[in-house]
Image 1 (tube, protein in one colour):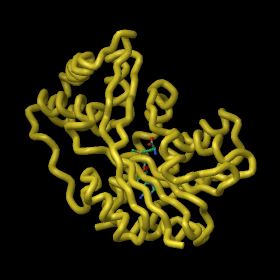
Image 2 (spheres, protein in one colour):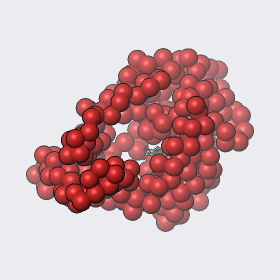
Image 3 (spheres, helix red, strand yellow):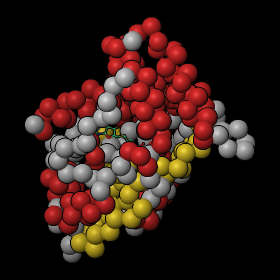
Length: 277
Ligand SMILES: C[S@@+](CC[C@H](N)C(=O)[O-])C[C@H]1O[C@@H](n2cnc3c(N)ncnc32)[C@H](O)[C@@H]1O
């Protein structure tokens, strides 16, 4: 049920928001700017963002639309909105408005946005096609939407390293396949955007390179942005918590590069389309 899914996602990210805030400036990633080209955002535009999280893409959008433009950054969780708002203020931008609420219920004026972007949020939605229809109505004619999703788990080491080590240390099975529309499949992602009524739909490979200072930093990052892992460990084997996280750091060391940092290439897709004119 949509309400149940949204409530669970709300609880999950609400708890995680503090960790996202602590690590936002300490983890490098290279995807924030690519939404601009995919959604054709120009200086002076009014841009909607769904699932702003800690504001990674918000900061780049605020810079790009400039003082004549506006970014309306939204997120399901007020805790995430607080983190993004703090970072935007610290960066000195005053062209961003924040709205907390789910994409399917937030009140925004129809046909009032030149573009909409959304990073790694659509896979959490109970009704991704319904939400895309909603976004389409918020766009002006020919307004563009660009959203990213992660590829299936084996291609996303940033996620799998921690979960594989933790599940195997606890003797638990791998996670179940996602139910419903599988946006990790580029053909389903493309179909979902077309079904929502977008034109000129494309879904392209869009890998995200991420970098942490050390293997231990990777493990601490994951522990803080995904507190459900500690819940899982504590429920099964609370005496081995530190040892299991050491094993996660050890596994991350497979991705050490010459300068001593940890670098992971994570497969992802970038979907885009336009509201019919
Ligand atoms: C994985 S994070 C991505 C954050 C950011 N865009 C990034 O790429 O770092 C997903 C975000 O989507 C938000 N979210 C999940 N479901 C949502 C919904 N129904 N409406 C709006 N935001 C939602 C979560 O609160 C979370 O901040």
